[in-house]
Each structure stands twice: as C-alpha cells, then as structure tokens.
Length: 86
Image (cartoon, rainbow, N blue to C red; front, side, top):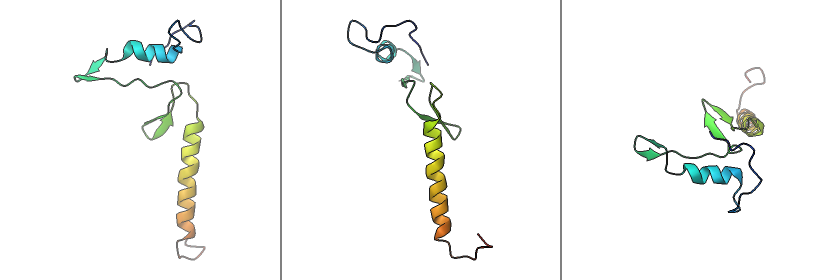
C-alpha cells in the first residue's frame, strides 16, 4: 500500500496520485522474481474470506454477503423438505 500525501488532483502528466504511484512502483518491487501487483485503494480484494479495500469501504463485502445469502435462500426454496426440516 502506498500514499502520495499532499498531492494535487492531477500532476503535470495528467496522472492522479494513484496512477502516479502505480507508475512509480511498476516492476520495482520483486517477490520471488515476480513484480508485485499494485492495487488502487478503492479496488476490492479477498483476504481471509473477507472482501476488503485499502480505503476500508465495506460496500463490496456487504454486496458479497447479500449475494451469498440470496443464493443460499434460493437453494433452500428448491429443497423438498417440510418446513420443520428447513
């Protein structure tokens, strides 16, 4: 994770701070001879089963949980069992 503090909204090349940081870090950090991947602060990623963003926006996790719950409920609707077994 990186941050360019006190940066203008766009630099002289027309890049946002996030784009400028991605450009600066690209292929500079190697782990096991592979370049690391830059993830923007607002891009969701899965970590230990939780969808996170670096800016801690939980809407992606809420959407994922909502989708999973709807899938499980629809599977229960199609399940041929008595209400007590449900």
